[in-house]
Length: 447
Image (cartoon, rainbow, N blue to C red; front, side):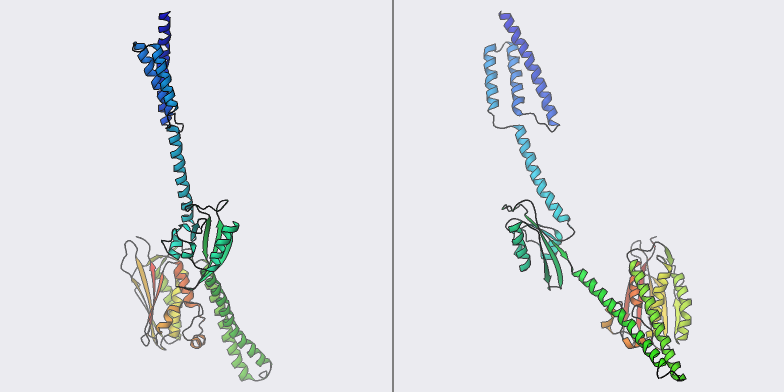
């Protein structure tokens, strides 16, 4: 009987040893998987294995071993620490940190200034655009520390109370005049009183540029209408005169017909310039894909403009054709640039004066070569206050002189937009009594 009992305990010991090994393997598997084996189970398996070994070795009586195993089991059952619970708590905390970091990244990635507020209307987070526009270092402060606009403060209070989106316009005059549209949107289902939990999101859309473009379009239409109205008035008056008092007056008829022809030509130039400006503006943001040689462009321009200069009594010269000037550009558009500049130099330069056009190479900046074309006249020059506005549409230094000489006020605006498309620059220098210089700088092909 005793022998059978010992054999039974021996078998139980072997079984416990196998269970311990299985527990060990499960523990190793748990280290590399999402499932964590409980520390209690691992400890219980080890206790069973040790107990079985002592029994097999004869160091413990079976009854004592059983009591020890039961005591170990009870101790492990009451052990407060649990590896799985600890891992779950760590994962939960990490998930909380990740969620907080996630919504902050979303606010940072917004293309407009954005500010997150908690349930007490205090700033929890603001992206870089908001900090640049309203000032940095306002985290934790009330929304009033960022903007004291009563409309915005009222919209925030209303959104916190009703949990409904609000919008309000903000008007600022310092440091520059601007108009903003603020949208206040609730986040989540209710207003939280926790300091770090976002409850409202405010985004700001700047409408100042939109207003500026609208004013520019309105001014453009008004100016174009005015420019067309003047020659139309001349034509209408001439026709009425020819049909009335000057019906049988041959001398008056010749005078009025000449005036009508001049005004019709002026209207034609204005319409052509308006269409040209419209085409250039439509393609301004599409850089040209072809290649052009500045030397060939200037040679064509010189061949076209030399008879016009001779007719006006001015001398025209071109230097620098020995310089190779390969650029990324459109041959015809670049020719239009230099034709406009030379026409202006002939019209507004000194009567019987001279116009020089020079091609040169700028000092190299890294691998980029830049070419410079200067159009120089010896006219009366331009006052400094007019220089920044010369490329505006319909801007003229002398309106009467410009109209008498056939100017439309759009030539330099066309030049500016063509050079913007070619990634070039227009520099204007002038001194009263000493002429003017219009310089075009274009990047060459990389080499």
